[in-house]
Image (cartoon, rainbow, N blue to C red):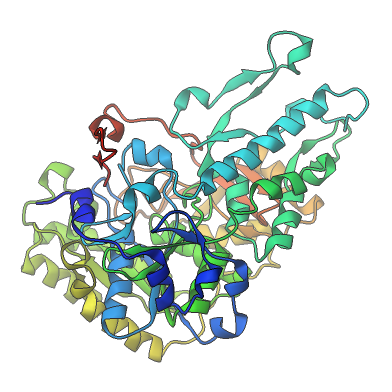
Length: 555
């Protein structure tokens, strides 16, 4: 069996100008990054065309160690729609270097459903992550410079500064550090740390903006801390927003690439779904809808995180109307939620599949709460049996939803014709989706609604620090903000080992962060890390590059 990178190398790419022609993009609108990548100007976004196009969201059941393949199915579905004669595109997030060199080894799809050039996309791509990192760290430097200043000091209390530096790498040693050591010339000593770049509020802002002026405004609204007399300090008080926007002037433009089978792909932005909103940029999604008739996009981790945030945050702020939701499941994942260990995923076990179906069942129920009936895509693996697939199809039918086998990895678009036809039929009778909560609700009510309706919790408890933050949110006039809960991706609950469909549990809100620039608050549920560490044997150990520059080991 060929590795993903070997499959990617076996097929020839089209020059990006030919991919642009499929979307009727004039060549003089392309900002080339070599032969196979280009940035697109925001002038291509057409609000009138957006209202006539169709948006399809791909999400998944609760993640397992085996992976569920949302990106692979998203790419295969877009290719399947194109095979049916539809003008289609896929819109995805950019991979983070941390997971690429850590556990994943890559995040550009798999098999015959990949976006290419996969090495570039997995690595530095067009420099967007670097720009986010630099803009974030410029603000950090300006904060510390202001603490040092005698004449331009904003009277910031160093103990209240919440802004951290970021780096796009898994490096646990940087989680908690002390900066400013070495004497008075080197700054004010204080505790700080690094987050991974996708966790930066700058990344969240990039994915929420509507245009360049909105970018500058949101950057200026970043809350960095408080003065000694408890007044909030924003990035605009440091006159940081224009300089930060300058660093992001190209990063704000979506990137055009292609799938292995030449379907147009927009890849832009990359926040994680467990600690941020987990979706690509509003700009890229709107550009896709402006250029294609059918746009497939995905949201990170399980539907309780990525899809909930896509529907309650991105779709509301961006005025988007997803008309279909594809819920990806694997036989292996259902076995996992049925109590099977990773070593036994490949063994036939219809009973475990049926037992683990409760997890998929809850996700189906959740999507229906948004006035959308999902389609279940069974992402096919070689070890799956027809009996196991029949169990899933029968159980889904009892829930009133269709389950279709997707062979994205094996066949690309040709393995998704049935799924594509089902999606087209679903869109033909779609109604407008309904958010789970209203923006004007109190923050506490929004949190309780998500915890009880989506996670299935019976109650929500707040630490003393979190309760104080609720009051601070009201004092600052931020009760209208959306809610972006940071929670483990491994369970509906805040216990990562509670598989399946946990019941009779309480959600524990440890703290609440205020992302005033992004326009949402972030309740921290359980023990969440914003700087991952590397595993015992990171994916980087398997990567090689030869004297000709050929890379191996990415996936």
